[in-house]
Length: 223
Image (cartoon, rainbow, N blue to C red; front, top):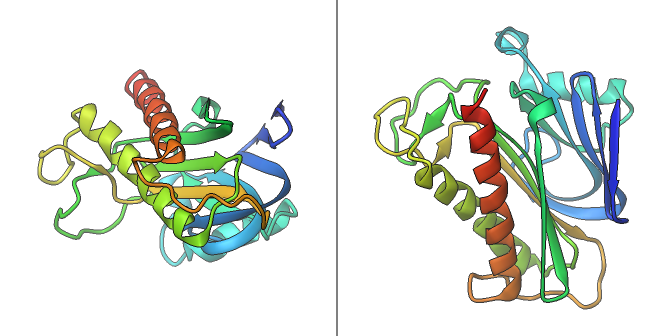
């Protein structure tokens, strides 16, 4: 088991099929995660590594993950599924204007697609799962905008890497099963109200996600 504690914000735990980021205090999470998605208060984000056969019908992926989280006593976590090698996760932190942002991500691109590609059966392999944590609290509007900035940075990094879509061969913008989680403290004071690209926090989120994605794509290509 590998445990890393950076500063006083969160600890990263790597064990068996799991990668967990456990915060020391509750955070507001915003995502479309397969388990615990939407806007919610939680103390952890957890990746579970699967093989394609683990999710073959009649397996229900959300229920599958819920049962796995129950087994480790973390059913209230935001949960993510991936086939990526969890030992190759990337961890990048940047600070600007008194605020810090940290990204922990696993990056796989064998399921690369371009936005607007024709619909097809989803693949449980080759996906990007990314957690971006901000040290400062956000208004609900800023939280939504922060998530959009993180997603835009994710797509920009994939485009910059010239990864072709597996369907059309045009430049991909992500994969068919990506998930981005945007987290910030549960505090009702000193709330950041705007997080667009003209703001310091928007700049910070974009910078740290771009760097994490660059490293993740580099690792994936070297696999």
